[in-house]
Length: 113
Length: 112
Image (cartoon, rainbow over all chains, first blue to last red; front, side, top):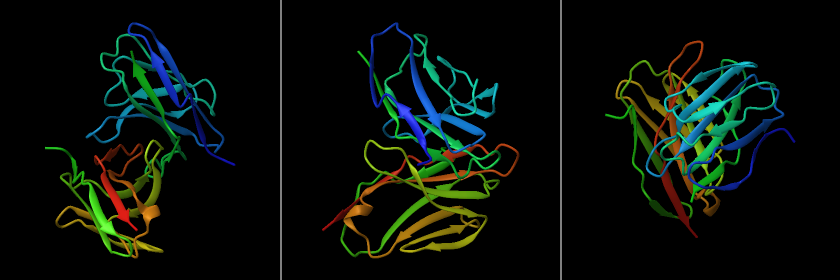
């Protein structure tokens, strides 16, 4: 089955630690995205990548980093510089130039303890 | 003012009712309009996608866009308990990379 796999589903992190969230897709999509979802707020774009080895900051990139070394993979690192990292993180992908029809993963719930 | 406004609900309806979910947007440059359904603790899934104005129907779901009033709607006919979820509207401008702006979502509960 084609789709997007995010892992882990739940993640706990101590303050001051970096943590990396995994996102893999087998849809052969060129574009991939990371969103953050908080209660009472719409999805907010963290980073996006339209092609391998290239990515751009979204609206809330501070405290996050990404890489896009392979078409299938777009990992997100939440660094210790992110002041409020507890959130639900969603990875998505779409065909190039059609991010209006995005496919989402099942999300990773990150909790900082 | 948020670019996309959506009533968070919750909205409770009896099974079989017609549900109307709505959003307003502020930027007249938006041309693409989407509705996503999100079950609890899951990722959103695309339900409907329309370009510019008009209606689009898919089974029990109808998406409607009124660009003159900057109003988008999703109607669900013969609602089912399995429709209980949060519904997110989203809009985007045309262009090489279309930034998508999401509403906050409306939580719907269909009571058997």
